[in-house]
Length: 403
Image 1 (cartoon, helix red, strand yellow):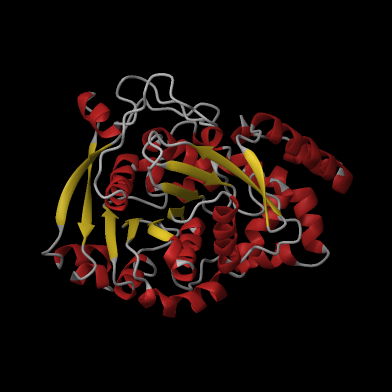
Image 2 (cartoon, rainbow, N blue to C red; image 1 turned 90 degrees about the vertical axis):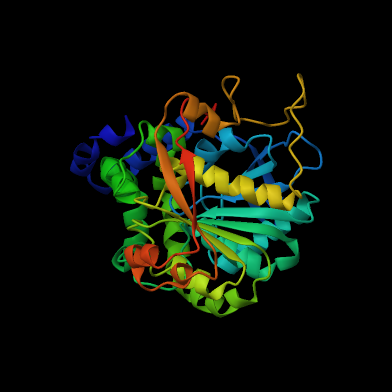
């Protein structure tokens, strides 16, 4: 098990040479276990690793799905792929420097550069407009795309996004990684074995206060994020994040496209009081889906609520026309998501019939006092007379093949 890696001490005993060899061996092992799932598309000098899952109907919307910091496309693919397959053409991509999208010189670390790269990918694929979905840093990129490329944004769905500058507490780590000599030595020798030895705790801190789902490390290919090049990519993009957000914030009021922001009111990584509420106060066409008790990873812990919000967006974009059923033997393309059982693609119904746990999501209109908020989740809930509450079931028994 990756989280049980215990060779760090032995590698340390052999000094830098032992650590370098250990890092090379671990990287090879990680890439054997978690190989590429899609195709590499050359865009503006960057090879973007893309998983292109076809829709059931030719006229279905296109949805681009962007992962967060320190992970890869395997994360949203595992969480959302099974439930959304067929509803839209799904483009999961590794952002530059992550997974199998390599950004050797780090020239696409900023939000604007990554947003423009997504636009260039759409050009490359002959796609005029898309729904842009992003989690965490990917949500920041989605917001930047909506601001910079409004005519090409059918809608935006931001899941636990960072939207405003703030002190995330990791400045010392970024400074260490970016140090000219010491940083390179640290990344090339120490980071991978050290990070693997701490993987359990790192994952738990991202999911807190919610429990970590079983097998999440293997299902999402989390070890891909501790390879040296991925660590560098994470450090580069987080180092410039606040500067890019500071330039983006004044432009939220320009948004005329529909935005859905999904957040957990117990998110300890990107607190809603610093991000979700201030964003909704500025962006005029935003629906806030606030999940009670949820942390930073609601697409994994509250999947049905997140899927239901995305389905509402797809219904609006598609003009509320029902998705055409997939005919037997229909073209599968590069679809890598296996939907098991006759209830596939209907996670809410499947979970309810199985007696699964039901969780409540509050849908907060942008004009409500809670959406504009500053009072925090508890005070906001008390001041939200216009809210409507919908129940969403936790999906069970839906798995992704090759993820």
